[in-house]
Image 1 (cartoon, one colour):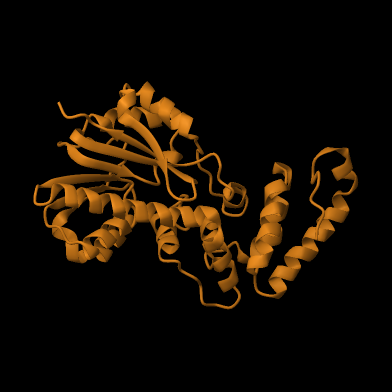
Image 2 (image 1 turned 60 degrees about the vertical axis):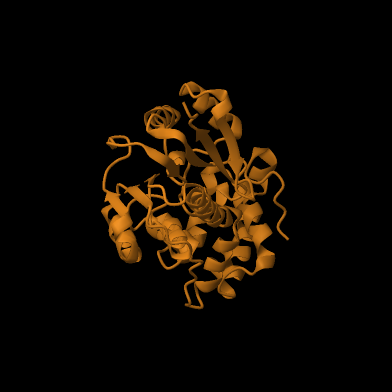
Length: 310
């Protein structure tokens, strides 16, 4: 077992840096020799990545370069074939628990899916399906409008409509990436009469109607605070009385954060429940209409904003 204490920080670590580097090289080499980590290696990998200093990130990436390519999920994130973090395709890989069958990469994808952050992403999709199902049961045969910001692969809508068809539910789906929209249209071709795809930046998007539900799970944690508040104000005005707006954001307590940033080059604005509450109050939303909930792991938080019936 590698001694991680004081790694790469302070005089002691400088004195032993050569020895530590040698130990890391041996450990990483052992992972490659068996074509990737087994579950019992997870804690050690997370400890190693979690304790490195910023000046050692390039070194760690060089060690891991054989799997930092689009053939693995973490490598797909690192190389960004679509040009940005958290694209629709990597989210779909997480939703579908995709594993590259090639023996050289399979264990690395298995490792990725064991990360708490990946599990939390799947949990938020399940939460979306639950919320849509409850809304459908509540509204029954009333016309119901849903707006999804940063819609990506639209998997949650697909699973909802497949399990509980409701012709009275209509969805406006906003995404900046034309490739995401093309993929989502193909995936949801049986439901296209209920889906309206909008290829726009959400900051510039100006809806011409109001909604029973506004949902955004994986978009706002890419925005700076001022843009977060601006969008809350903008879209909360479009919630119908009796409706709600639900905005997801990764929690500051994300045990996979360093793995995402170091190996995946995947950076988010992590926020606490208090941060989300503060943003909602800044947006002028009454305190009684604000709550913060989480998926089961507590890694994805959700700001829930209701609109009182007049």
